[in-house]
Image (cartoon, rainbow, N blue to C red):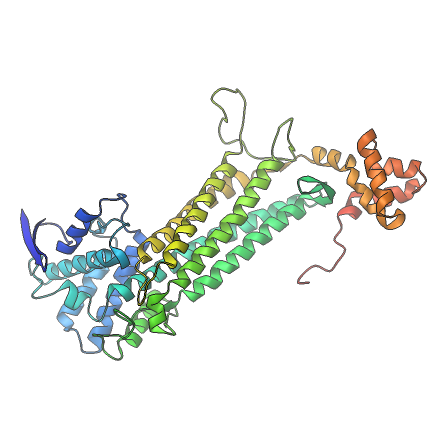
Length: 466
C-alpha cells in the first residue's frame, strides 16, 4: 500500500504506513551519507518545541484548537517514545536543518491527521507547514531545539563529572601519606604526595565542570520567535513571549528570549563556546589519563608508582602483559571530542549574512561528544579510578634517591653549592641527606627534620583562593 504526496517540485510515492512525508523522503534520497539519524535528544527537544509552539499559537487565537490539540497529542505520542523510527533524515543534510525540521513537521502532522480520522497526507486540512510550523522557521527552531537538547544532555554530563571528581578526591585522601618525587619537565623535582597529585586532578575536573555549567547557562537564551531572519515575520507580536513561556513550563527551565534576534540567527557563538568547554574538559582528561599511564608504567622498567586494575589481557603475543586500556580508551574518546570541536569551530565561522546554516553539524558534534563522555566516564571511574593502588615502597625509594632534595638546602648554602651537591649525588648515587651530614652542612638531627617526608611535602601557604 502506498500514497502519493505533492510539493512544489512534483509528486512522490510514499509507503502508506509512513508518518513522514514527501520532503522527508526527498532528504532521505538526497543525503544517503552516514546512516546516522538525528540524535534522540534532538528529536525530543524539537518535538517539545513544536508542542510549545502549538500551545502558544492556540493561546493567541492563531491556531484552531481542534488542530492544535491534535498536534499537541501527536507530540505527546512521540515524547512517550513512540514512532522514533519515523525520523529518518541523515545528520548530514541540507543546510540549517530544513530537512530535519520538515521531518518533525510531517510526522506530527500525519499523527495529528490520523487522530482526527483523516488520511495521512491530507495537508489541505492540517499542514506540516501552515499548522505544525506556524510562526516558525527552520532558522529559529533548529538552533532553539539544539540549545534545549544540549542543555538536557549537559545535566547528565555534570552528574558524571561530579562522580569522577569525587572518585579522584577519594583517592587523594587514600594516598595523602604516600610521599613521592615530584616531576617537572618529566625530570625529578621536589617531593609531593600522591594524594596531592590526585587532589589536583579532582580540582581540574571540578573547574572544567563549572565552565560547562556557565556555558550551559548561556544556552538558555533561545532564538525562537525570530522566524526566518530575526524580524519575527508571520508570527503574532506576542508569539515569542508565549512560546518561551510554554517551553519554560514544559521543560522546567528558565528560558529567555534572545537579546538580539538578528544576532541569534547569524551567530552560533553560544554553541561554539559550549563545545569549547567540552574540548577544555577533554584536554584535561587527556592530561590526567596520560599521567596515570606514566605513573603506572612498568612493572619493572617504568615508574610503577601506581597499579591500575587489570581488566583484560594486554597482548596477543606477550603472555602476562597488562596494559592501561581504560586510560588509553579515554584518550581516544577525548581526541574525538577535540576533533568534534574543531568541526564545530569551522561551522561556526561559516555563517553568512542573516544565518548560519551549519547548525546541524554543530548540534550533532556537541551531542556526540557529550554521549561519548557520558557513556565512558562512569566505566572509567568504576573499573579504573576506584581500583587503583599505590606502591608506597616504590614511591619512597624514589624520594630517598632524588638528588633534587638539594633544593631544600639552597636557603642555607646557596643555589650553586646545592647544585654541586646534587651533581655529586647523581654521580655517586649517595643520598643528599647523607652527603649533607658528611660535609658538615647539617647535623644528623637537622637532616632528619629537614628531610622528613611530611615536612618536605607540607603546604607552606594558606589553602584556598590566593
